[in-house]
Length: 80
Length: 133
Image (cartoon, rainbow over all chains, first blue to last red; front, side):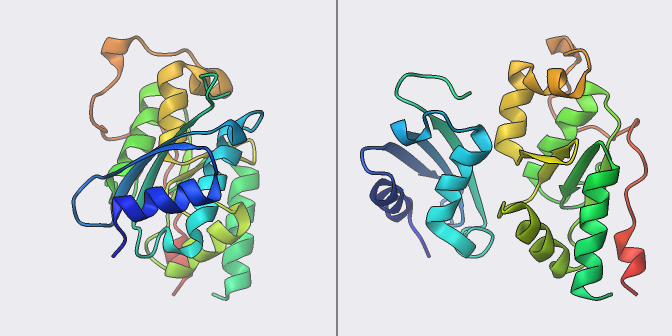
């Protein structure tokens, strides 16, 4: 069962320099919320930003990770 | 129904319906909180949309995610393009971007239902499950 810490570390590994905060919403290890600030999102649409994060976990999202709620932004502020 | 037929059905639904929501359950009886919030936002905007329940057959979700490259449900398509899942739709709803994209007026805050309400304006859900027998 994945933990919030594990998800945070995997996102940070995939997006070096990102500021990542992951919360286990239910305590059950399957519903998470992740807030990620990264300059990698610069110039990307919201869809592309969220896909970058989903791609870290591949088919685990929808599997062991039942739900991953994502909020992305760039260090400069605002999503597009 | 073969996987190819399901895929074609999904592709057609995205193409033919200007606002197409794939969800768990129906707008009247959402089966997941994320789907409930997303259809609730569309209901609050009073926009007509088609909705497809992905639960009757696991292949619907597999084929949909294969087409869209998006792993989770719900998924909202406008004009044939993936807009996003619950997080993006709710962000866009709150900022007024969604109303703009759909060409409708942003409702006053007091008009926005706090919880999903039974939909009144959308078209009947597409009955893919009826074709799976």
